[in-house]
Image (tube, rainbow, N blue to C red):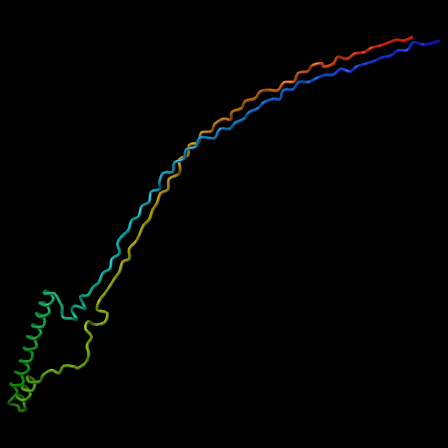
Length: 184
């Protein structure tokens, strides 16, 4: 006995895919930025230095004095000379009054009136040392400043985003088949 033979032939299904890739575009525009820097305020104040020179003592040493001081000095010397003359005459009067008691009063009075005062010899430095007085007040500088903060104005721009989604489509390139043959 012969059995029938069965022949089965199959073809696979072939599936095809069409893929469109997605498209995405992202742009970030730069921010709009404005910066202003106000100038700083600077203030400088100075006081002048002062130099004071007093040469009045040196001028006096040289004999250069003002008319008021000169008049005062001469008046003082004249007054002293008058007082010295009165004292000398009173003393000489006392001596002459006691002439009868003996002694050599006239010779003594003549010697007093004829003695010339001796001047000392030597070197005199004119003007005297340290006769010019100086004083100095230094100058001062005050510096002050005020800074100003910068003015910053920033505008942020949103990103530009464009998106196109992708697409996948399928199609049957080959349908599946089954072929069955029976042979006897």
